[in-house]
Length: 169
Image 1 (cartoon, rainbow, N blue to C red):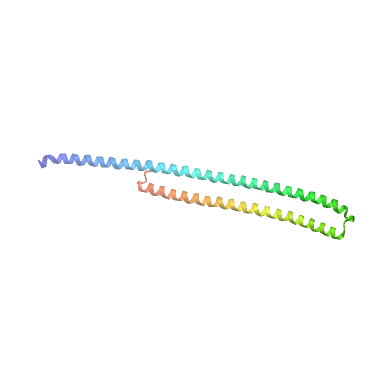
Image 2: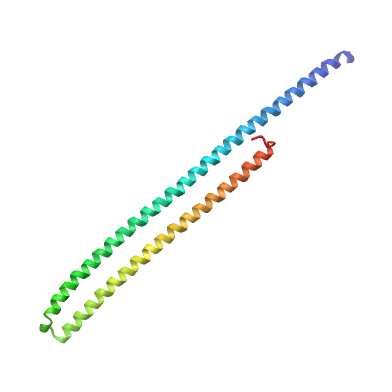
C-alpha cells in the first residue's frame, strides 16, 4: 500500500509545489501592482504639491500686489491731502502779514506735524509691506521644506518596497 501511494504522494507534492509557486508569483504580481499604484500616487502627490506651491506663490504675489496697491493708494491719498494742506498753508502764509508772531509759530508747528505724520505713514507702510513679504516668503519656504520631506519619505518607502519585491517593479 505504501509503495502504491508514493506516486500519489509525489504527484501531490508536485501539485502543491506548483500551487505554492503560483501563489508566490501572484503575490509578486500583486506587490508590483501595489508598488506601481504607490508610485503613481507619489507622482500625483508630487505634482499636486508642486502645483499647490506654484498657486501659493501666485496667491502671495497677488496678495502683496493688492496690499501694495492699497497701501500706495493710501499713501497717494495722504500725499494729496498734505499737498492740499500745503496749498491752504501757502494761502495762509501769503497772508502772513496779517498773522501775529504767535499765530505764525502755531502755523509752522502744524505744518511740521503734518509733514512728520506723512513721513511716519510712509515709514509704516514700508514696514508693513516688508513684514508681509517676509511672512509670505517664510511660509513658502516652510511649505517647500514639508514637500521635500514628504517626497523624500515617499521615495525611501517606494525604494524599500521595490527592494522587498525582488526589484521587480
